[in-house]
Every structure is written in structure tokens, then in C-alpha cells.
Amino acid sequence: MKTYEKIIEKIILISAAVSTISVALITVFIFQSGLPVLAEYGICEFIFGTTWSPTNGSYGILPLITGTLSITLGALAIGIPTGIACAIFLSEVLPKKAAKAFKSAIELLAGIPSVVYGFFGLVVIVPAIRSYVLPIYQIFDPEVSATGFSILAGSIILAIMILPTIVSISENSISAVPREFKEASLALGANKGETIVRVLIPAAKSGILSSIILGMGRAIGETMAVILITGNMAKVPGSIMDPVATLTGTIAMEMGYASPTHQQALFAVGIILFLIIMLLNMIAQFSMRGLGGKAS
Amino acid sequence: MERMMNGNKLKDLKTVRNIMFYGGIGLLAAITLAALIIIIGYILANGLSHINLEFLTQEPRRMGKEGGIFSVVIGTLMVTGVGILIATPIGIAAAIYFTEYASNGKGVIIIRFFTEILAGIPSIIFGLFGFAFFVIFLGMGWSVISGGLTLALMVLPTLIRATEESLKTVPMAYREGSLSLGATKWQTIVKVIIPCCKPGILTGLILGIGRAIGETAAVMLTVGGSLRIPTSLFDSTRTMSVHLYILAAEGLSQEKTYATAALLIIIVLLINTAANLISSRLGGNDES
Image 1 (tube, chains in turn brown, yellow):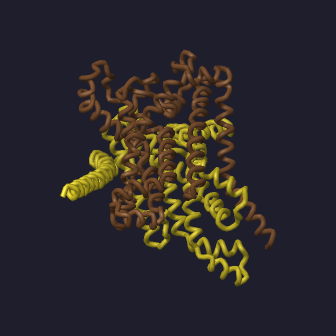
Image 2 (spheres, rainbow over the protein chains, first blue to last red):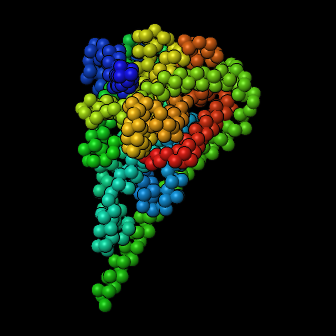
Image 3 (cartoon, rainbow over the protein chains, first blue to last red):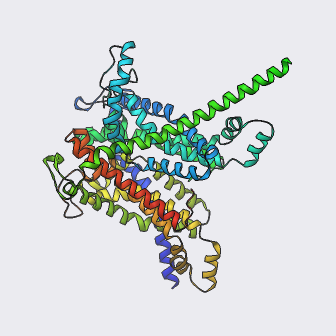
């Protein structure tokens, strides 16, 4: 009986270690497959090279990095205020029952597959930009790319996709602010709005910040939505109407037909992406843990 | 007199600010809700009418331009099924380890940390890994099994988290009661604790299935895109989300694309409803 239980305990320990082992394996295999190209081509040339043209053997990923960054920043610009507003609305304004319904709506938003978001962007957002936003934009800049596949389209869709992350974590941390803080502020004569802006949000700062960092990680890592709506042009963008290619999109699009060296270069892109995401996730985890919030 | 006027002005200013503040918040929340309704509504409105028995039961013809998506549905079921079957025992065991066996040592903190990290890795990286490891290194090729294993890793954090949350809600007294009756630790876990948190585990399972069905990038790189019905675990196939991507990217058929997207949305709605029902009806309080 004793040995039987001991074996089970070992099996359970191994199961718990599976995620750690997987992270290790993922790291090893991505690096192993991508490092040769990085070493041969030179890390600086790889990161700061401005032409991505695998068929001609030039693997400069600066256009991809700027592409990813520009739609991520755009998504954050739309998503942060909206997300925090929703979090405040949930925790401070709505009555409990309505808040529960609103919460499940946000959860639903998180459950929609990214490729569906991409398809929606393709059939609704891109044409809408082409016919409503572009004409206005063209008054100021007649040379602008006129397809609608753009940073703007990508930012809008990504903003919707990162909302659940921002809302749920921000809401948790706003709700976790001790009631005394709120009561003290109200007792001093501040109204509810002032209390929210001056007391609750500063107190929930660390949670809100983590939610933004995690949202950013999600935006950078998102693939299928972006691939369908940003136009996939590996060029450093000049305006929000320009089409861009992203790190993720390029990997997904080109992996299917890539030659061996090209494939290694795509793995090298994966290394860069992996490092960025790991860094963001670790910052988010430490900031949540260090400041006493719950990590889950 | 003047001071009173100033006071009134200040009060007015405060009221105006307050109204603007609440108005702004309400507006942004309304926009969020509207985005959800528009996305789901638009796709259902355009796609529902094209979903019929023929669409569900016929095999795709001419690259999906005509016919249905029968083989794609089978492929989706197989890949998702393999992934969930592999991930479920591991996920539950891991959660049991965290709540029942682990003391708060350094090792546990590290394992927990990496579980969180695993949850944050984007799907395209899983895809690259699955391609390099399962498809090439282990020689499984583009196949159901490669995709299933990759998906298993991806849904593992979801499963662990959901199970752990519900294991934590089992009162300590249950464990003590069982142990004091002479049951061993393992007997207590199997006979007392797990039955108590079936709803939580089930919710995690359903959410995991949802994530697996919607996953595209990782599946595309590990399962391939064959439109034939897979006859073994080592055959390549295509899942619904990959099918949707290919139809949308290549503009093959508006009608079939909308229908596939609508089908995915319906599945997501069903999965969310089921998860909500289970967690609310069976009293598991997953207020996470």
C-alpha cells in the first residue's frame, strides 16, 4: 500500500513538472533552430536590417519589429482607456447583478477565436476604413496607401482582443482596494468620481499596470487576426494608413513554403518574439506578486 | 456674497466634471458591449443561412469552394480530442500536486512560475515548437497527433488553474474527516476531494476545449491543411479555424467562409453557456 502511494505521488509530481519541462523544451528547440542564422547573419544586421526579402537572402527584421510595435501601440492607445473605463464601470458603477452579466459578456469576447476577429476585420473594419476614413485622410496626404489594410485596422481589432485581459485584471485589483480607503475619501467630502480617480485607481495601480503589460504581450503575440488585416508588407511604416507585416504574421505566412535557411530565419524571428514576450510576462508576474496581488 | 457665488460655481464645476466622468466611462463600456454584439451579430446574420445539413455532412469540394465541411469537422474533433485527452490527466494531477502535496518550497514556486509563463506564450511560438519538435524531431509529420500534443501543452495552464481553484474550495474538514477514518491520502483525494470539485474540473475542461477549437496558428504549423478525412493519428487534416483562415485569406467563397465563421461562433457560445451553467448551478464558486 505504501509503495503504491509513493508511486502515485511521483506520477503527480511529474505531471506538475510537465509545464516546466515544456517551457524548457520550447526554449531549447526555438533557439536551436534559429541561432545558426542569427550567428551567421549577425544579430545586429538581423535586428536592424531594413529589408526582409528571404528569396534574396536578406533577413532584416526591423520592418517586422516596427510593424508589430506600431499596431501594438495603436491597440494600447485604444484599449487602455476603454479597458480601465470598463473596469471602473464594473466594480464601482454597475449593481452586482448587471456587473455579473457584463462580466460574462467580456468573457465571451475572450472566447471568440482570433481567426474570427481577423475575418470580421477583413470584411467590416478594412472596408469601413477604405470608404470612410481614407477619404478624409487623403485630403491631408494624397499619397496615402488606399487599400484599408493598415496599422489602424490592426490596432482596432487588437484593441478589442486585449480588452478582456485589461478589464478582468484591472477590475480585480480595483475591487481589492480596501473599503476604508473609499470611505475615508468620501468622508473628507470628495465625491464618488474624485474618489475613483484620486484614490481607487492609484491604489490599484500595480494591478492595472500588470493588466496593461499582459495585454501588450497578447497584442504582440497575436497572429491570425493581424495576418488577415494588416496587409503583410514588410516595410517600415510612415503613417497609420500604411500596411505592415508583423513578427507573428510573417512566421505564420511563410513557414509553409520556406526553404531551409528561410525556415531558420523564421525561427530566429521566433527567438526575438519569444524574448520580448518572456520579458513582458516576467515583468507582469513580478509586479503582481511583488505588490501583493494575486498572480492568477 | 461673492464667496457664496464662488462656492456655487465650484459646485457646478464639480457636478459637470462628475457627469462627464460617468458619461465617459458609460460610453466606453457601451462601446465595448456594442463591439461584442456587432461582431457576433454580423457573423451570425451573414452565416446562419448558409449552415444546413448539406454543409455539415458533405465533404469540401474544389478546395472548400463548394460542398460542406464534414472532413474539417472530423479533423477538428480528432485534433481537439487528442489534445484534451492528453492534457486532462496531466492538468488534474498537476493541480492536485499544487493543492494537496506541495508545501510552499522553492521548487513549487518555480513550477508555478513556469506554469504561468507557459500560459503567456503566444500560439505562434507553440506552433514553431510543435513543428520543430513533434513534426520534425520526433518525425510525426504534419498530423493529428502532432497538433494534439501541441494543443495539449497550450490548454494545460487553463486546466490546471480551473482545477486548482475548485480544489481550494473543498473545506479542510473533509480531508481531516476522511484521513481520521483511516483513509490514505490518495484515497482521500480520489474518493472525497475530486468528487467535490467535479463541476470546477468540468468547467476547466470545457474552457480548454473552447481554446483548442479556436486555436489556429499553432494548429496550422503542426497539423497541416489536408482536406481528407484522417484515417489515423498520423494523417494530416484541417481544423475549422484553419479552414476559416484559408477560406478568408484566399477569398475562395464568401458563403462558405461566413458559414464556417458562424459555426465557430455558435460553438463558442455553446461552450460559454455550458461553462457558466455548470459553475453556477453546481455551486462551484469560480469568482476568479
